[in-house]
Image (cartoon, rainbow, N blue to C red; front, side, top):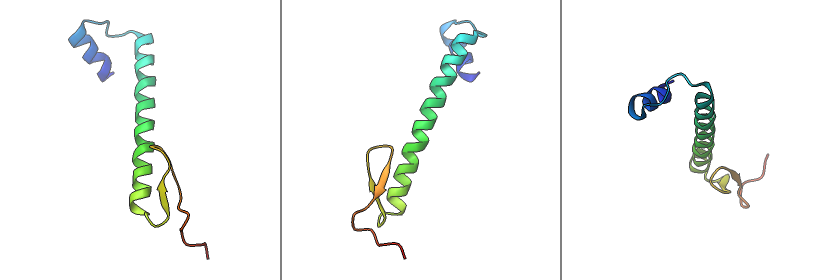
Length: 70
């Protein structure tokens, strides 16, 4: 609703427009999910550097020289 209010206040759009609200909600949810996954991948690589290495911006993989499981 905050995004809709900003569009209403700054750009003179209709405040209660269900289609625009749905589209903006989907875009915000997708952006937040991608941001969360990127942050998680960075955390895993930074905190467990002896186990994991980056495998793209959104994932990590086990290092080749990682210690074997006991």
